[in-house]
Amino acid sequence: MVERREFLRTSALTGAAIASAPLWARAASGFAFEEATVDVLQEQMTKGALTARALTRGYLDRIAALDRSGAMLRSILETNPEALAIAEALDKERKAKGPRGPLHGIPVILKDNLDTHDKMTTTAGSLALEGSIPPRDSFLAERLRAAGAILLGKANMSEWANIRSNRSSSGWSARGGQCRNPYSLDRNPCGSSSGTGSAVAASLVAVGIGTETDGSIVCPANNCGLVGIKPTLGLVSRAGIIPIAHSQDTAGPMCRTVRDAAIVLSAMAGVDPRDADTKDARLHADYTRFLDAAGLKGARIGVYRKAFGFHPGVDQRMEDALAELKRQGAVIVDPADIPHAGEYDDSELLVLLYELKADLNAYLASLGPGARVKTLADVIRFNDENKDREMPYFGQELFLKAQELGPLTEKEYLEALEKNRRLSRTEGLDAVMDQHQLDAVVAPTGGPAWATDCVNGDHFGGGSSTAPAVAGYPNITVPAGSVFELPVGISFMGRAWSEPVLLRLAYAYEQATKHRKAPTFRGSVI
Image (cartoon, rainbow, N blue to C red; front, side, top):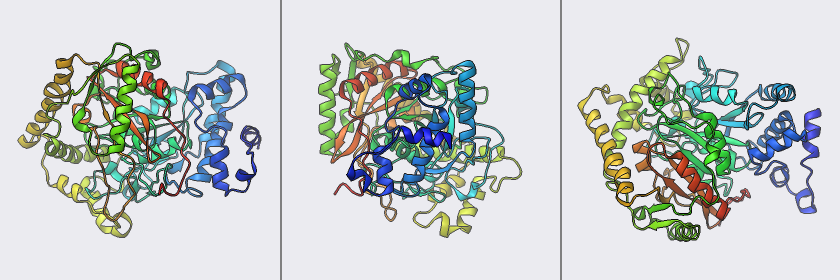
C-alpha cells in the first residue's frame, strides 16, 4: 500500500544489534515518529514529506507491535476502524484548503470514558458497557474532530476510573487487563488514565486525553514521564464523559511536551450548554502564546513542603528542581504549605460517592433503552453475576457504599461539599497564595512507579494532587528527572483559571531542564 511504503521509507532500522533483536524491540528502537512533537509532524505534513494517512498507519503498526504483542503494554482497548479513512480525508482537505490548525491530521488517543458516536465503544473498561455506542459525541470529541484531530482509539483505564474498590490495581480493567508501564514493564502506570499515559509515553500516538477526579491525570503523567494538565473545573466540558463526580471531574491533555499540551488544551477548552460549569470559563483561544522560556524570572513560587518526605530519591529531585527554579530567576518561598491539606480526605470520598450514584445513574440513563445497564444498581448486579471476569482480583465495595447513599439534597452531602470547597479553596490554596503573594505552588507529583500487584492493590508512596483536585483548581505536572531510572514529576498548581501562569512557569522549567526521556521497555529495573 502507498501509505505503508511511505511510512517504511521514513523508519528504516539500522545496526546489527537492532536487526537481531525481537520484532517488537526493533519497532521500539527504530520508530520514525518516536517522541515526535505536534510541531514537527505539522512541519513534515506542510512540506509534503508526510501525510496524515502515513502517520496514522505508522502509529497503528506500532500499536500492533508493542501493545498486544511485544512489550504487551495493554494500553489500548480498541483502535478506530475509520482512522485511515479520516486521515485520508484530512489529507485531501489540507491540499484543497490548508490545515484547520495545529491538530490537523494529528492522531489522538482518548481515555475509554470519553463518548464517541462512531464505530468505537465507550465502556470505562467495564464489560457491563461492552458494545455501548453513545447517542452523540462528547463535547470534547466534537472539539477535537473540529480541530482536525484523528481519534485513533480508546485507551485502557482503571475500570470505572478507579472508583469501584479501594483495593484495586491502577490500570486494570475487565476489558483490557493490566496496563503496563513502558519504563519498567513490571511497574504500574498509575491512575485511571493509565492507558493514555502508557500509550503517549511509548509513542503509540502523538498526544492523548485523560480525565481526573483526584490524581488520574497527574499521577500517570508522573509515572510515565509526561506533561499532564488537570484544568480548572469548567474550562473543559464534562458532557459525554462517564462520570465519577461533577464537583471534581475534568478532562485534560497528556503529552510529551508542555507545548503539545498547550496546543491540545486550546482545542479542548470551550463553553458548552450541556455543562453549566463552563458558562463562566475564562477561555483563551491559544494557550501556546503564554509559553515563555524566560517565564520563571521574577515569579514567586511557594514550596508545599509537607508533601515531601515520602521517598528520599523524590526529595532529591525536588531539591534539584528548586535549585533550577532559583537559577532561572524565580523567588522561592519555602515553606508555603497549603493549609488544611489532609483535613478533608474523608469528606472528599463521601462527596465522590454521593455524586457517583447520582451522576452515573444520569449518564447510564442517557444511553437509551437499549443499554445493558441503566443504573448503578444494575452495574453492581452485573458484576456479581460475572465475578470471574469482573472481580478476579478486587471487589466493588465503593460501589456498594455509593448505592446505599441518598440524593444530593441530603444534609450530610451538602455539609461535606461545603467543607471541601472552603478548606481547599478559600482557606487552602487561595489563603497560602494570598499570604505569600505567590504565582504558583510546587510539590512532588508522586513517587517512582511501584511494582504492579493485583493481589494487594496499589502501593502509592505519596503525592500532592488532592488540594487542587478538591478545589477544582489547575495542576500541571512536568518531568523532573528519575529515581532508579523511573520518571518522577514536579507539580505547578495555582488559583482558579491560572492556566496561563502555570503554563508559562512549567514551560520555562521544562526548557531549562529537558528531563523527558523515551522509555526503553525494560522488563524490570532490578
